[in-house]
Length: 533
Image (cartoon, rainbow, N blue to C red):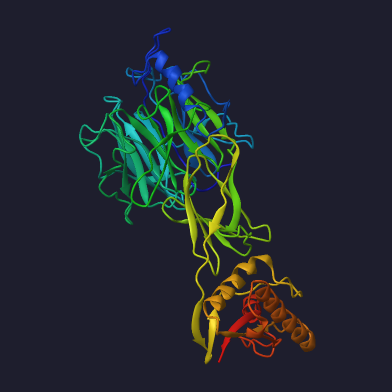
């Protein structure tokens, strides 16, 4: 598991947890019976994590805190010598920052002190870096009040090997308020953090402040009741693409203690959080989840059988594979419709993917569990078809949904000083003159107009592109025009009302000569339906 230069950090602070026997109670006061029930009800919830000891844990607490120059920064209360001072609130030494090398399998090396400048006799906690790694935002508490953290900023001295200068206490700090677990968004525009500010819905809420050009922070904005509850929320982090917020909470649909949650970031709000499921969450506390890449990350937990208070685990999420597929069909005839543009959109209408159906008229998209989508099908000569879709399963699966399109009505209009029945293009196989099945629907429209207008006579004029010899193209266009006439006769139109003629490449719609694009050639391959006097 190799971290990238983009910084994806989930940071942690204090977690208090009490344990008894069969009646043990977690920090959010769930009974053992409720924990078991919730764990079963939540299940894997669309995730499939594997947790492994990260290989760096001790009898003390360890928490991950982001990447710096491809090294993991860790917060730990490891004692440094026999004179280490003990925090009476945690009963461990005051915390310091360490850095660790990361092996290819995600295991961590022996820790070294990260910075002689940032580490002090006070208690350092979580930190986060700007995307260019030249600015660090970090938290520190005093020995006198180790439970109240303040937010600082420092910058990396130019051409130095980790010399952080210009430390300053940031403008959003308040007396009696603790600011914890900061995280800079991947684009560097926002700083997320947890705090017990006066407007918090619970003990600690998650907030966000804009990062101004000069490095100061805008007014903190509470993320609101969709994310925050009357209980504690901490440890925000974002996905690599900045589209998802991860955080830990004692509230929401919870197994016990702090659970990890995911919320999609919408344009003006946040989607209802989803528990990351029982393959990573337990009845104990899971905090400080942050990603090294799309599927690999780190998490800290105080679950049993660890080495200390909190231990760091590698967390690999084997992606749940889901697809939605189906055919595009004509509503009336059920004929398959190739050459249809099918677009997958997210719940805000943003395009996620698109495809163009082939001869089998099948579309297929990858989707994610418990996400909302819409799918639109667009084809010339048909009204746009769409439907909303929610991926409601939490396992590898495929959903099936055919889309049936309704044809548009033909138009009688003057084109190039000719009165025509204007419809979508008629399709033929390459170098062949048999009408393709999908174009039966189009020719049915022509037959309908002729039946509604029994005195109308029609010239069917076929044209080709300029690929190939002139004589060949002329002959091919004659045969294609004749094929269209034969179909209309089979639909009950008197042959005396129909005239067919091929023009080959002599009347291009786009006169591109020897520099024709695929689009130009497609436009020139056409059949026109001209109303005769």
